[in-house]
Length: 118
Image 1 (cartoon, rainbow, N blue to C red):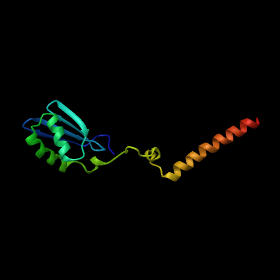
Image 2 (image 1 turned 60 degrees about the vertical axis):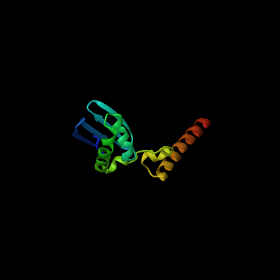
Image 3 (image 1 turned 90 degrees about the vertical axis):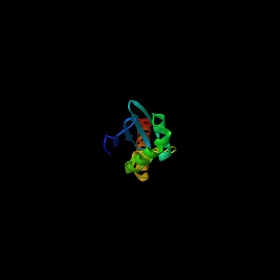
């Protein structure tokens, strides 16, 4: 994944509109110096964000629908989920995480045994 987030800029009659799409449904909007960001899971929520930064409600819905259909396919990709197990964040399969944990425990036990005898 690139360090640069996908961005769209267009000129509207209310000023220049810049939309930056993040992951986990995050979006940031800048309209002529007013900006807002939040997670949006539908074009309806995107329309609400447009209204918050200065778009009139009656035009926000059409603009949001257009932006929603043009958003990048990976904008809804999740990098983490609430309640997700921590080992999944490593990107390793469960057996590899278990193997690493067993190795750490074995090293600790050997260390303790060696120091009890010596």
